[in-house]
Length: 317
Image (cartoon, rainbow, N blue to C red; front, side, top):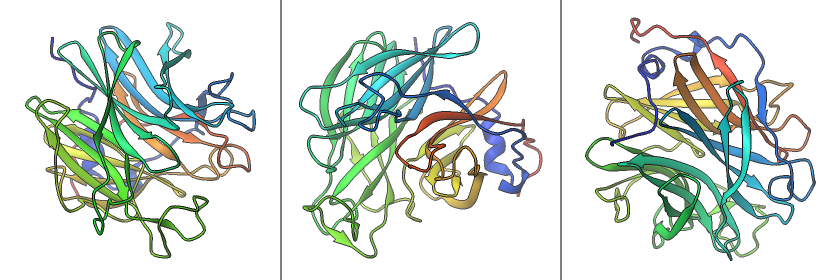
């Protein structure tokens, strides 16, 4: 059986209309909060984000990152109940000896699960790893598959936050990378620059393991925490930001048009902006999932959801 992430035709509308057409009728609601030793974070108030949803048979599976009481990140699973409530099922991936494991992007191909994730053995020197599974619950780590390149490349310090699809013939991955951190960043050993920013890179693979990456980035604008989806040849990139969820559109996944803010932050529920947004569509409409902190502290995220009304595909820009 050939199975991909769920992308439905309504996503095409987002690529063809202006952001001002997106009217959010209600405040975002929290659908998952961090609790327990694996997700309550050192401060004890919870820190979960980076939702990634796939359909497997009749089930919907949400993979997401949670920061534990010990400060380390792990990848968790939640499933949707008959009452349309996301129920946490616990940690499903936490390789030993790794400081940071987060930002899952899952593709199902011929009944095999491929999970690409951000991996940092220590500190914040991220790379992109791969784990595989036969059931989506028990994972075997394959180690790093995309590493930072040598200086002076734009992605010479770290790469991470992958977004992966399979287009029927090959795997395609978008990710963010950077050459240094901003001045004042807490890592004392990291290279720093007052002009530091993130860029979006791109690579392709036939087997999901060996990747051919583009030397240059495909999008800048300090973009990171992205999610790319595709339907009928159109691509949509969601981007985390302090202003909310930003977005860009493309006909080939390589040349992107900046479209500004898609859904702005809500001063009551997401005053710090949106983290790692994800757009999901099904028969009930379109849902934007993102991490956000209701509190004055940016690192107390829960996973929130807001419904975006059905969008017309008839009015091109």
